[in-house]
Length: 512
Image 1: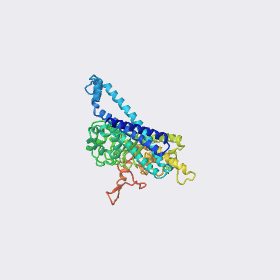
Image 2: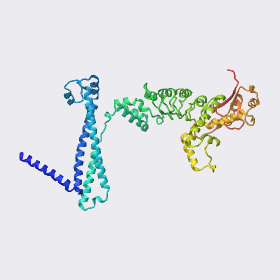
Image 3: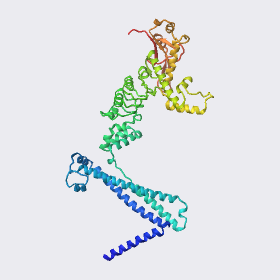
Image 4: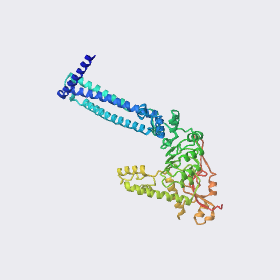
């Protein structure tokens, strides 16, 4: 045995001397350089594997004994510690803080070593890739082709070692904030129902799903159009899960009523910025009143095709910073708006346009709303205007898409304003649709009790004549669906608003 040991020592010495001689004499040969890289790669791969194993072991110890660590910190007891070595070193005396500080020191050292080895191995990988892309490196016969194959195999080995050394995380090792971030992304991609089904994965998931951080950016039920009040109330529960929600979409949820919608808005009232409730029967006057009074940060509201909206609540109460109010034609608005309230709305909207034009002019030099007002509020530049260049049209489109207020009822409001101004002027031609309205216009305000302006055609008539005119109802047959009905104006045959529809109350002499 002694003879064998001495022989092995002599061989090792001779190999070391041969390697050193090769390094000194044949440093410039490709084969010697490859052998040197191969030895270096093996050493780095083995050391990196050991460093990553040490890191995983430390993380596992901390994850499995985190409760004991907390207990040690709180009580300073030696009954629970991070590992047996620490118990032996502490000698049975209280040292919880020392145990934790020692664990963090070991983890920090292991991380530093892991990063250093990873950096060296990445540099070696980069060098091998660079050599593989060079053309003139392997020009030299059969030995060079064999060297190319060996270096390609070495590159694959290094890449595999780097892949295996990457830190892996199990679901049980994730912190609560990391789980919440992941669930927040899943809400956007897979929807509310899928995220709620993940509560069966673990108790941690069940706890995190009720966290406000999961629902703060999106709560979208537009894909669950069959949801009922009961389902929504089960989702909301009695916690603050929706207290940070900024964007809510309930499009198409026709089975939701005022009760569940109000409860959702109460949970997320102050944080809501965007609210979309297209074709939702539960959007009532109470819901709109709650939005204007308890949602101070809302800037986008979409209530298209909602049937139970009062014009006074919908048009006259928006916040000054409301940018998008989608109503699309006001066909479903109802109620008479008093003239003074309507004029206040016009002044508010004009002031908003003035402020926005001043901001846009500083950025791009365009007064957007003034240009649109000159073109009947439709476009910034007319197509037949040859003085406008294509570059100016492009800038105008970009400005309009980014800065313009998207209140869909603007054209209706300003066209109705023009008709009101025409009524208030001395132009008596073609405005009054009945004798009582003409008498009021000629200076007899007591000739009628209630006087109403029709926003679509601009004619004015009293309440009695309007009631008589609605008796001449016109039926429009449809191939698909029920028939529709219209009430033509007696002066121009343009349809008047439906009963209870949106109109302007110019005069009201009734005594309450």
